[in-house]
Image (cartoon, rainbow, N blue to C red; front, side):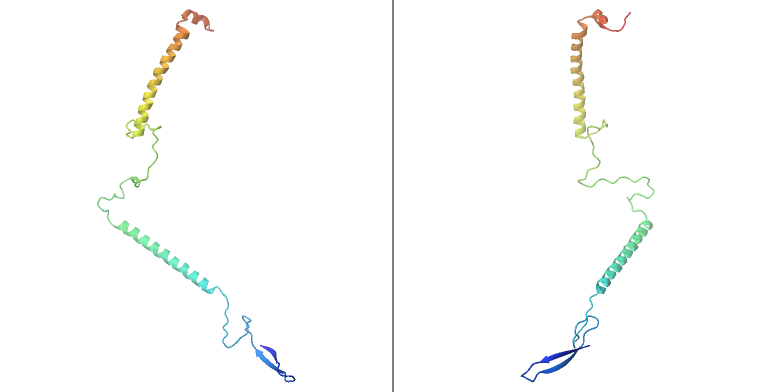
Length: 168
């Protein structure tokens, strides 16, 4: 509570003093009137909502775990459908890749399969064989003519004489 003095000025010699009693709120410090409601800024509402969200998420997680366990139990208890692979079938087969997805890359340079029907492999192997045959043919022709030019026309005796090793 506070005591305030208000000076009311009127005509000359008629000044009056009017004491006024006011009250201030102990919590917020604002002057308290008849319609004063004290508002304290807290984060209670925010914390309460966050706790509710966490609880809802936990509930959802538990429900999902229950559903998953029930589905696994159903799968285990149901007999095999016709056409479905049995559980004791041995090694599982690899799934086919989806449409538009390629498997492992098949390099035609390193393909060792002689029965491979891929177009790139067939073309590469045929071209490689042709190139090898042509290379041997050209190499033999050049080597033979070069050898004849250097050695055969000179003769056997000159070749032996030119050799640095001793011959008997």
